[in-house]
Amino acid sequence: MKYIAVTGGVVSGLGKGVTISSMGRMLQASGVKVTAIKIDPYLNVDAGTMSPFEHGEVFVLADGGESDLDLGNYERFLGITLTSDHNITTGKVYRKVILAERKGDYLGKTVQVVPHITDCIQDWIERVAQIPVDPSGQVAEVCLIEVGGTVGDIESSVFLEALRQFQFRVGFESFCLCFVSLVPVLSDEQKTKPTQHGVRDLRSLGLSPQVIFCRSTEPLLDATKQKISLFCHVPASNVLSVHDVSNVYFVPSLLKSQNLHMILQEELQFGRSLIPGLTS
Ligand code: ADP
Image 1 (cartoon, rainbow, N blue to C red):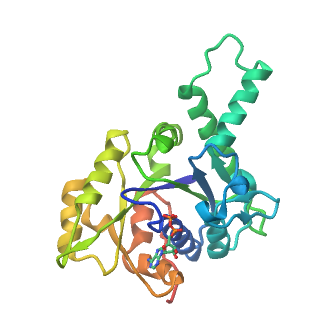
Image 2 (image 1 turned 135 degrees about the horizontal axis):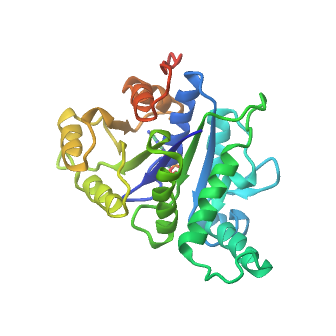
């Protein structure tokens, strides 16, 4: 199993869900089976008790699980059926660890965020990644993981620490970290500083992105890519433009046109070539 984790910086609602779904769609077009996990760093056990005015509508999964709308994006883009376990929240993780503590599973031990909560998150990801999600009943080859919120939030830090440890658990050749950032335009200039700061925050947590997706109104200029590459420690070819498009279903081919399949092939050391059969 290979894992692609996506985090985001600067602001929420950047398009992490659309980007990760599109990445999955592009991988499927290359013959790779994918599954997806959404991490929501809030203490609610699920989205069912949250106001739709505050959180947006709830997406109801086939097993009755009430989750974030992103899971609906994954299901529609990827043609898969997810379960409530594919939506990991802080509430679910803490509930599991505290119930185990009450049962006496950790008797004699001090139960702590590290390692008990972080281990629980990693075990959860590994277990859920093995659940078949398409009609073939086969286990996926790649698990996409979206970490909600933005890097630097207190709420998401425990999940980022779990992912930092997870790279060592599964091996660096099986883990690719992506960062979605905002490139605003001021006085006709594409500004890279928010991306630089976001990546710096991520690196201070021990995580280094291998691919950076830049959300902007217009396509990213070559000079902007070069600058992000220089300051964020990634090759310019791994800085991708995810500019505004008229329909989000165009994003998979936008990523393909920037050779994301070749980047993932190299970063995740796929033993075969990934050439998507996408035409538009
Ligand atoms: P996040 O997961 O970061 O909260 P979403 O994936 O839900 O963000 O996207 C937020 C909004 O941005 C959605 O309405 C989505 O349709 C829109 N969006 C995302 N990417 C693009 C794009 N490349 N072009 C136009 N709209 C986009």
